[in-house]
Amino acid sequence: MKTFPNDFIWGTATSSYQIEGAAAADGKGPSIWDAFSSIPGKTFNGETGEIACDHYHKFREDIQLMKNMGVKAYRFSIAWARIMPTGKDTINEAGIAFYNELIDNLLEADITPWVTLYHWDLPLALQLEDDGWLGKNITDYFANYANVCFERFGDRVKNWITLNESWVVAILGYGQGVFAPGRISTSEPYLAAHHLILAHAKAVQIFRNSYAHQNGRIGITNNCDWREPLTDSQEDKDAAERALEFFLAWFADPIYKGDYPQVMKERLGDRLPKFSKEEKVMIKGTSDFFGLNHYTTMYAAHSDGTNKDTNVYGNGGISEDQDVDLSLDPEWKVTLMQWAVVPWGCKKMLHWIKDRYDNPNIYITENGCSYSDELINGEVDDQERLNFYKHYLESCQEAISEGVKLKGYFAWSFMDNFEWASGYKMRFGLHYVDFKTLERIPKKSALWFRDVTAKNSVDF
Ligand code: GAL
Image (cartoon, rainbow, N blue to C red):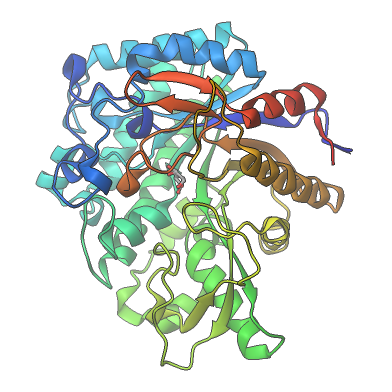
């Protein structure tokens, strides 16, 4: 049996576009995901988040399900265009009212809200009028939006996450074009990322300068897979390190050390924008905790230049900038996303963060897996998911006992939902959602998770 610290936070997570639906209800403006998913061919089966899990109307029921599961914290995101339809100026009071009710109902159920300000659903107007994350003014628009959220919700919300997975926004949205806004480029990702980091820092500055009395905390969530050197050679070890720097240190170094990693500066030259002296000072130290989304592991090897095709679901980033070849061990089991199940990679990832960033408090804000779950006789026996959680949590517990300050864990996801370009086929949830009737059914893993959170320990 592995016991977790007494104050360990057990939670579950979702994001607005993936669950809310009600895409145009009560004055909400369109987002880039509404637009992107409406273009034939961009998502599996042409599926969209127009209705999704209809959480906008069913949130009370969902909170009850969370309560039954015993989770103490719920991470959700605010749809920027629901409270500011064009992304700037005008506030939609109906949107504010929705989040007020959601927050109040959570608190009543004794569930602590963890709010992400941006989980990819940029107001479409900002894309059309200001070039999305490529325009410099976006950093101020985001800061103003964040200010509205702190002002309206900060009396009750004490845990804020500015951005979810800037790497995905930059690489999949502006590099590979597989996510909204669908742009393909080898330079735009670095510009978009630059603005994302500045936007984060400006929001944190406002929070600290004007809302200190709220006694909340604020951080950012980045994502990273583990990269294990394919061989013991120095070249492969360097390649694995380089891959992690291009993945996670790209965003975490400016925040924890004040600038981009040296290796990125050397390899990218002018494609990597520069922070001014003042910006470096503003950015450094802008995270009260280290938010990590972690799903999988790949081997990394030095690329001899012949095989540049390292992308498995885009996880290689812009591989030619790194000279890294990625591969899977044929022995590893994979999920429906083709992501390898490698629990020890999670522990190594946590240690890497501990060592590089001076042992920060870490929260795993997402970890989970997709399988083609089926409802049979009213039950979903998702044993593979249960095993996934068991072994990843074992790895987390070991990391804690070795000195990693992991403080909480949020399972992705609370319920099956719209999995971006993959539509509704990838079932990630602890609850099975029947997308015809929108009924939610707890899976075996949800019942197991309930026991874990109740006992604060995992049996092996
Ligand atoms: C993350 C993302 C989530 C969810 C998850 C599973 O990258 O933040 O929204 O889609 O992956 O693919």
